[in-house]
Figure 1 (cartoon, rainbow over the protein chains, first blue to last red):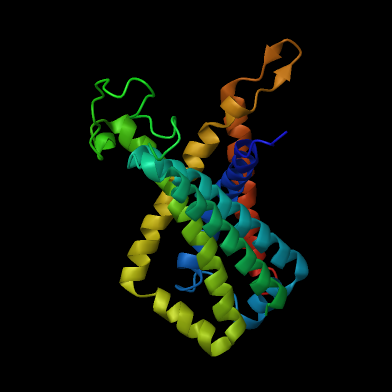
Figure 2 (figure 1 turned 180 degrees about the horizontal axis):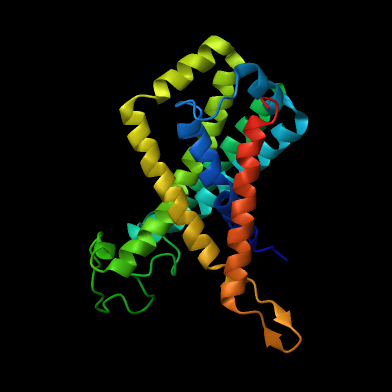
Length: 115
Length: 144
């Protein structure tokens, strides 16, 4: 029996959506504003030590991977419904999930070697 | 027919001549609820951008203190600040719409009664607040 693929991608979409909903506004506020505008006074050495910790790198990997698959699944249907690109549905699916998979592999490669 | 039937909703086998109204590409601008729907779907772009941005920031961090300072300096440009304000708004829209749908996905039964939707949403907002505090605390962990 062939396993249906849709529930698998939906599970990734769903967990990525929940993680992004809980974590990303604060993360973005820190990265986009608090650090550049020095609202938070986190030095280079302290940040590097924090992010070099194996558990932090694992957390970053999970966040990036799930967020990218959340994007892939949702954006795929945005293109499909919003722009009505019915005839390109196979290509869109390959580009979206493929892009997310590539980003996940790239993140793994980067985080293993970090810093 | 080069495509399998069913892949294209505009085509039905044996009934190729049924009349179907063509939807304009910007069909979702006509009504506020449609626009809100497409905006919600587009928040996925902000999620993906922030994930990749985190990796880029870590890249600058790994290159050394000079590169990290230059990276932060570049982000102080008004253009970047304005763009990132927009991204943050999209992320907030994602959070609000996502947590607002939580009672649809999570039905808590207490005996024979159902936990009210408002309680489920409130619990998720509490989790959001806790997670946000943790994220900020995390960045200050070793700085004290």
